[in-house]
Length: 215
Image (cartoon, rainbow, N blue to C red):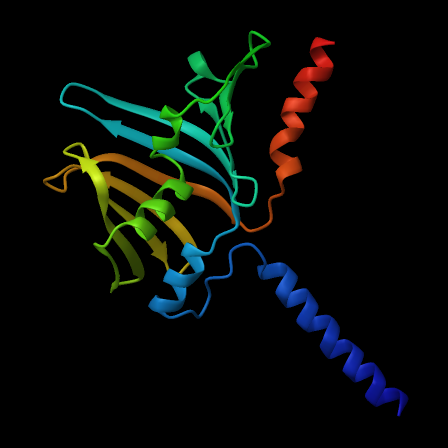
């Protein structure tokens, strides 16, 4: 009897450990339609991403840390590279924008700020575009599941988005933003990404630190 009880407890513990170890990025063994549902129901994410922006004359590269919590509609983006603008970040909740420069230890708040709602670099922006457009689809291509959308009310420079999920590595791999000819103008490579393990307090922690520093 004791042996059976120990075995049951061990099985429960292993199930809890497996769930915990995969929590936040559990794409493993999902079909394409399950992956689509998983992506569209992301509640929060935290990522370090390499952003490359292409233009006719220049190519600019940035490394950004992005954080998003759907419940509070909070989105934070911090520049990690290049060093010339390192520490520049903003926090946006859909109405208010708070911008900060950690190097200069200055911060500014903008009320009823709307433009940043069109920020295309966030994964949350892709999800919103995908849900709003009537021209969204997903498909398999080699080891990738690709979610593709033609952006509703997009312009010639911001017309299509493609999100790549690597089934082999079980992770969100990259996001491409394309013009009307489907030429990639923005390439986002996710070096690190954690899904559904971020809280509102995690994003606001830095804000509280800034307030305490300025007191």
